[in-house]
Image 1: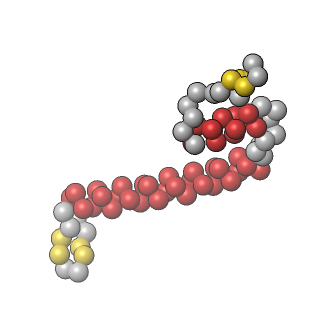
Image 2: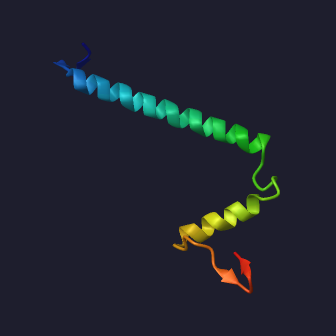
Length: 74
């Protein structure tokens, strides 16, 4: 049992602190992995990545389905 200013901490509090440490560790590892991946394979290197990026921008602006313009979908 750990002590905090002379008061014993509950088991739930100790587990919550452990969970917070795990979340911090996950965030740090995810950021490190993401940075490594940026240098291994930079964005927009694959030929169709720009189309995926445009689709994500379209979806983020609320347009779920692509529009047909002059017979072309886009």
